[in-house]
Figure 1 (cartoon, rainbow, N blue to C red):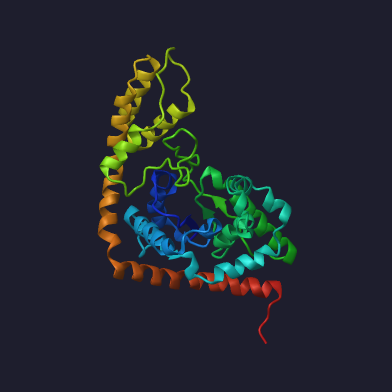
Figure 2 (cartoon, rainbow, N blue to C red):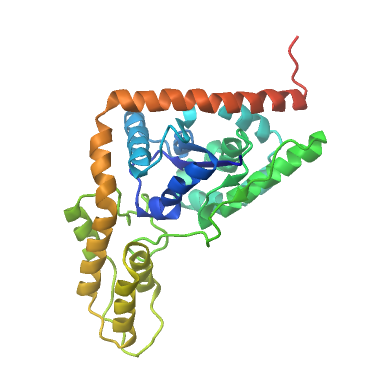
Length: 329
């Protein structure tokens, strides 16, 4: 059975971009593949999060993974820092990762621009840690958004480099996994690009109805089209993109026609969009409320998940160490 791996940074609540970008497909994957889902708390350290908030953030993401439909009896779900084999493989892979290639990644350049006072080594070697996350289970496939495709390509490069340097065929070159569809990128409500917590343009899965209505109401719009069948500006196209993933085709067609005839009322569009987001997220929010206070269940899930993940991780690390020349006396 092929192995699929996916993770998400532990920087707080999950949002629509997470759900429609990948989470929704996880339910399908765990039925057909050997799946590893992990909460990437080590990755979050590049932004120096408040240590008093770390555990709560991990807890939020774990709760929402489970509420979204990940079944720990069918898949392995674990916290990254509970698997010590990952940082050791990260160390070993860093010996074959080079400054030039790491500093040229789009994510590093963007983060360095946004946080010039905190261009740390972890930020530079972020792709290597991501590669360790994937290669520790020698995964066949990885669900990624468009913004992570470069990191996945670097993982393939590191796998090839390791195999070539040590003249082995050990690591697989993992492929992007998207169920045969284009990799989906959910835009933010502010018209500035993808939906993300740091951008402040999210609808979170845990948001209640009033919060969602307020957020959608504030979404960027304009005076409306003046020419029939005109091209939508990006910030309007973003609203239609979200509409397409939460609404029925009939609703989408209705508002497309209103746009093309210059008869669209953004108030009506936002009202419908908010209603459809609420309908899509309410079942998840209800499960979040049920799970989040069940400490015994959360502890059981993470303990058993770490145990299962470490079986796979320990095997990989032992074999990698042997290939690299580390032998026990």
